[in-house]
Amino acid sequence: MRMIPPKCPLLWQLLTSVVCCSLWNVFTLCEAKTVVVSFDGFRWDYMHIYREQLPTFWKLAEEGVHVEQGLINAFITKTCPNHRTISTGMWEENHGMVANNFWAPDVNASFDFSKNNFSFWKEAEPFWTSAEKQNVTSVCLQFPGCAVKEQQATYTLGLPYSNDYSWKSIVDNMTLYFNKEQNPAQFAVLYYYEPDHTGHEHGPHSDEMRAKLVEVDGYLEYLLSKLSTEHDDVIITSDHGMASVSTDHVISIQGYLNESYYDHAFFSAYTEALLYSKNGFHDMLMQDVQHFINDHPNFTAYSRADIPEHWHYKYNERIPDILIVADYGWLLVDRQDSIDYLKGKNIIGQHGFDNLRLEMHPVFVARGPSFRKNFTLPPGQMESVDIYPLVGSIVGFATDKTNGSLSHVLPLLASSSGKTSSLTQLVPMYVVELGGSLLILLALCLVYSLFILVTGRDCCLRETEEASKKRMYLLPSDLDDEENDDQLFSLEEKEQASMPFLQKDRNKTRLTSQHS
Image 1: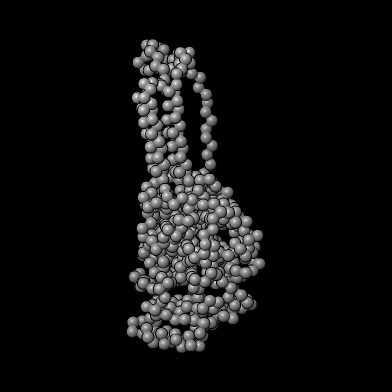
Image 2 (image 1 turned 120 degrees about the vertical axis):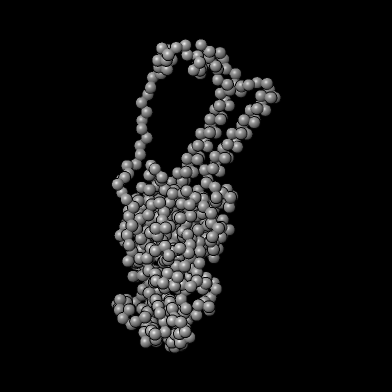
């Protein structure tokens, strides 16, 4: 029977190590997760005002990055428009969600949070849809726009601004989708309605807000307990801040406007009024509005063509013909009885004011292998539209159609090369890792070939005859007959322990609900 001694064990050990490391790195990259979370109404300076109540937020910032004075968000600083800006990287005039409630002439219908018709949302693509197009399985839980069927992620749950699902259930669903045996999610987008709700009821400077932020810090702690510090990226942000408003500064416009001059009017924003005039009645409607402004100088009225450019709130047919904007700290309602709920309150919380006001800026904190450690980005350098290209550079999808800029967020990243380059936005990260490992493998083969040419030796290590005999490989042609099979391969088999897996509820279905 012929025995063939192994050639160069050292070479095979090196090659095996490279291959194993490559496969492990590829596996790690495939298993790495990216999570984007929006806590509605989380003002950037809550981390300073309520520092003692937010130890987990500060721990995250110290282990990663945060933006001083928060993000410059989109005007109007409301929930639906700004979440659409976060998820698409576009200003409101480009993504078309111009308020929480508005008239859409292209759809010939009014919009509110309960509307999931694609026709309302079609003007822009959210990042979970962009990720899916690059074969990145995604999960969207409660985030505005996640229930639009034509743009849904693989896994979707519920509608935004709803307390139908607790924070724990949202995170547990995310974990379930991350750990699925088949088609596990790699990218998750989560939304929760606090601390916005508490801010509206009690204002940003209140004992109730202090207590609520203790809870929100616990929410973050629970989320982080489900993620890997070493491999997973997590981004915590918000749509807007919150301002304290005296109930004495709430003004009714009742009696000033002739209803026959407009087709549609929306006052639910409180900080703005959206008026859509009838054909031929714009000037008369503006005269009525101007009479109100003369009596109440804490408000300003704009025709669509006169809206300031820096708001990026002009070039879309959904923008109202006349926009009334409240000064900071003032609110507008359509009827006097609309403010009955304020009786007995001195201070309430509201947002929607000019996006240049620091009180309107949302928080931004991030941690993970993609981000630097203990780094603070100076004020005024990052906008909400920049989140989309940032996420694209991490997750791995193209971000050509965006008002944001990757250059604004490069200082936050651990490296400005590699997967943050425009090339690897289009190529999965595991391809880059595998390609690098193959280059190393090729280099080792070239070195070994040169070694043979120079030394004339075909083995890196000399073995003694006795050691060589202990390591032999049997060729199939060496077998004399089939009767010897049992003797040749009669090695004792050891029972292997099975790998533990998380128990999953396979009967759980995706939940969707209609928000009202």
